[in-house]
Image (cartoon, rainbow, N blue to C red; front, side, top):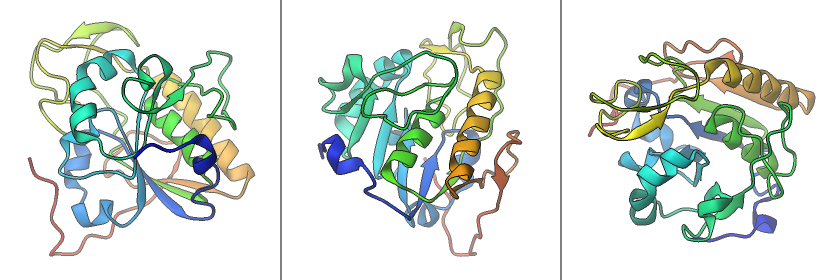
Length: 226
């Protein structure tokens, strides 16, 4: 499972990869589609009956809530915030909070950019993927409060693919959609400058920065169930 950074650099040069986000729309994505690509999953992705090719987590509240799940259920190479990396047998991610930028050296530092999806895109670029497809990027949350505010989940989680994603009584940080959008624009700029692409295949997404596409679904394809 464990890999060195030297194993990661340009490992998937010229390939098409999949970044799996965790919005409610992910439930509509056929399992067969997820299995077609080398994929990067994040945070609570292990709740799916599916293993991505790589796993990423940087938000401390998410890591602490998902700690046991990561140890028990994530059986792929992991990229995790430096504070937790050694104990979770992961390659360390060192967060740098300079002005929004895109790290070409995630082995040295990454910019979180308001969303773990941005971290996954920096890793995907480093791995050499030419084209990245996004699923589960709804970019919409049913919540009130200030960006990044720490709040307690008081109901079933309406904002992710599982109602138990952030469990009732657990703390989580409210999203910063504006910061995410700044990051997405930078990711698109960097990819396009190198003749690479990012395409959002999320049905009903509220994100309007990346090029859009659709998932071709066959009648026999199974949607994800819990």
